[in-house]
Length: 41
Image 1 (cartoon, rainbow, N blue to C red):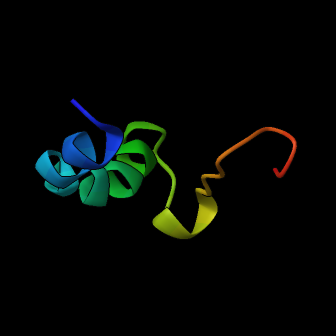
Image 2: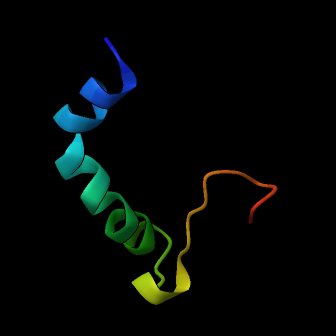
C-alpha cells in the first residue's frame, strides 16, 4: 500500500489528531504545533 492510499483512508484520524493531542496534554489547540521534522521545528 502506498503512502497516499494510507493517508486517504486515515484522513479523519489525522484531522482530529491536533485536537486530541491538545486535550491529552491539557493545552489549547493554539499551544500545540506539529512539524514534519525536528530540524524544521
